[in-house]
Amino acid sequence: MKRYVKLFAGNAAFAGALVCLYSPGLIGLSPLNPNIFAAAASIAVGVIAVPSFVWMNKMFLTDRAPELLKIDDSEAAEKAAELMGRFTSSRVLGGIAQSALSQLERTQNAEKNFEKLVIRRFGTGNLSYAKFMGVMRQASEALSKGMVRMVNKMIIFDELEYRKLSSGEYKKDDIPDSIQEEKKRLYDKNLGDLRFLLEKNEKVLLEVDHLMLELSEADYSGEDIDAAGGQINELLKQLEYYT
Image 1 (cartoon, rainbow, N blue to C red):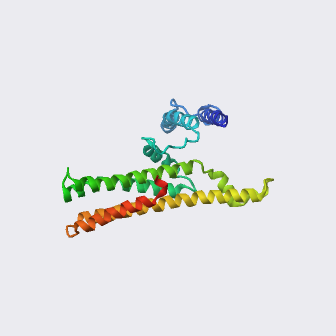
Image 2: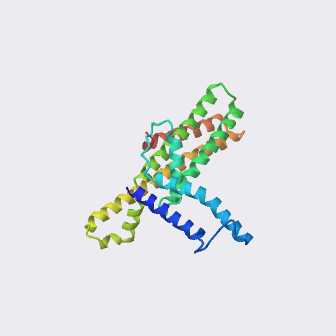
Image 3: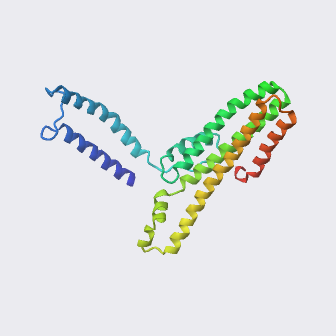
């Protein structure tokens, strides 16, 4: 219901603004105005008004909370990346969202370069190629699942309420302070979990970078490279939130 109230109010305000701009008794914009600059301004406003009207209504009609994502959804990673972009302007979650998107971009770049390095070092169609590409695939899947979990935590995070609780404004209402302080602790825990996921993703990326460095160096032995790949596997096993 609130969405339609906003829709009505937004359209009423939009219409009122156009009436003020084009009404002869007010600003009086008109493409027939003898003043060339005033005529050009009226045309420019009209051209801008149409896409602005469409965009505004689209925003109002799609203004709804996104649904929680399922880890096993084949499109979960793509949906998570799209939703994460919506949180980048958040005062509370924006920094975390931007860092997560940066990790996603770095993962995609690493995937492209990793295969090139493996092919240069071992060729294709052999056990070494399959083994190391399997390591990269597991790391990429782990990072994608981490992002899905982060987005789900962001979806249930009520930023307006958190900011109210953080400012101490809750002390002015009739709800017991102890209850609201407990709620604040839950929000803080959610933020802590998000930062934990960021940290674990970063550790995976660090080990991938380490393995890529060793693959690129001709003087690193096969044992060194195997050890770096094994380190990634061990790290992934420790990340219970990926399972």
